[in-house]
Image (cartoon, rainbow, N blue to C red; front, side, top):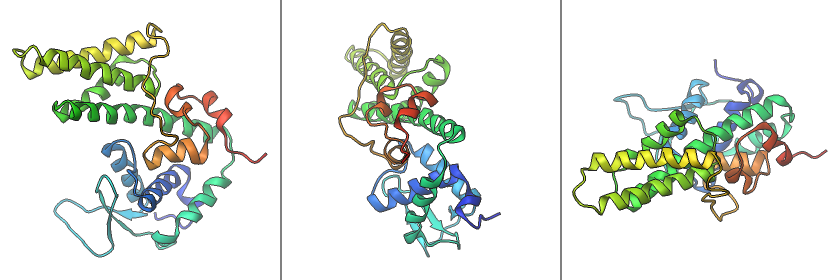
Length: 249
């Protein structure tokens, strides 16, 4: 059923809706990866807030695209107008009590963003060194199969080290691309295990910018919590979120 109010939509849906509208207003990527951006839109489509074009279908009336990913969508929620809904969503999110549910959802979103930030950074590094962009999925496998907990900054360091290892292997000239790829994947796993064990100390790649570059991450780090650089450097947890709660009393 289509929700009649933001309360009916609920917190996760409102978070994704805020990110979509914030991205449209400020020309931002919706999320660090296109997969996460599409997931957010699919959640909104499941609530009939937006529509996504189906296979083989096309529509142009009311069609919009996410500014960076270029994903097509159309506003379908009659309760609000797309161009004026953002303040209402912000008011709703500001009214949500800072309770255990909020912290639990916030930590889960943060954990997902940590993984996607690393995948996006790995993709950037692969492109910079002219490796196959398809290899970026190896970061997701490494994160899932290694079962180690790292911060976004630490995962970015592992991505950088892996691409550096790939460049070293590629310079040898005789290795097939598959061997280079496996060498890079192995390096992600080795670095992640070493960082988790504390062998590289505080090693990490932390961006200098105050705000993360995507709408969903900005919402978490700057709008609903005041994480600052902690967004990049801390392990996602309820405890890490609590000092950054944006509360008035």
